[in-house]
Amino acid sequence: MNSQLKIGLALGSGSARGWAHIGVITALRDIGIEPHVISGCSIGALVGGAYAGGHFADLEKWVTALTWKEIVGFLDMSVMRGGVIRGEKLLSFAREYMQEKPIEALDIPFAAVATDLDSGREVWLREGSLLEAVRASISLPGLFTPVQREGRWLVDGGLVDPVPVSLCRALGADVVIAVNLNGDLLLKHEKRKDSTKETNKKMRINDSLWERVSDTWKNELSERKNTLLKQWLSKRTGAPGMFEVMYGSLNIMQDRITRSRLAGDPADVILEPRLGHIGLMDYDKAEDAIAEGKASVERLKPQLLELVG
Image (cartoon, rainbow, N blue to C red):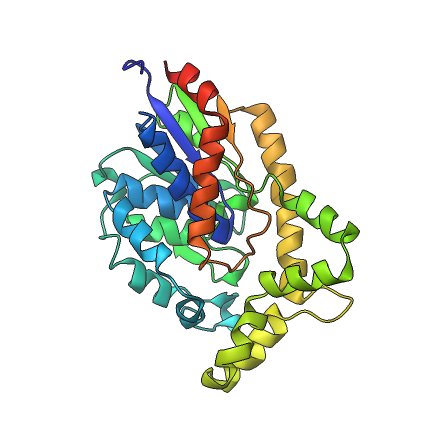
């Protein structure tokens, strides 16, 4: 590998599909490619921050053992405050696996991207609390509550730059390997239209956290959580649920933004794991996502080695 090149890794947004980033980083290291700088958006900020802070193995251990019952436990409901998940439970749990550090003290240069809710401007988080930066970057509208930082309300960076190549270059990268987690989502929706009713039924069951939760644990959840989860996550026959409408709309928006941003500032290599089968809240499908992340590297292995050779 050319030791003079500074390799950058731009990790994109994609909610539960983001565990594929773990597979990507692992596979890159296996072929001798280690990033010198990392930029992350949303779930990419979480994985990238863990790697930059030296807690990558701890994060992988946590996510591969994560169950959907634990995911439900993160739902500290706060709809009146701008989102379903306030985030304190998730962050307190993450602190066990990612020690709080200032971004400036991380092992390698790192930055996260968020969006200023008032102005719509892209915000680069390059200093201060790592966990606060990650929390701001993952604040998907309607799901996580916004984060107030330095007098601004910040939400998910995927609204402005789902795959932060520009930020990666600003950190000093000579070449950028980007990971786009949303490349096959719209294809997935097209396939749904053409599939049989039985296939649709199976996919709906796989994609709906509420349907999976309700079978066994419905009676163990509080009355308030039951009501809100039904409203947000369930699906009715012949029509998508509220959550599917909201997230499907965000998928379309982020796909268009990603295409536009990458056209204006293309990465040197774009990895696109095939993750259309993994839904918004399928955080317990880490093994599937990680395996596909590794597979996406293997598919472009010759191109990657040529890039850094």
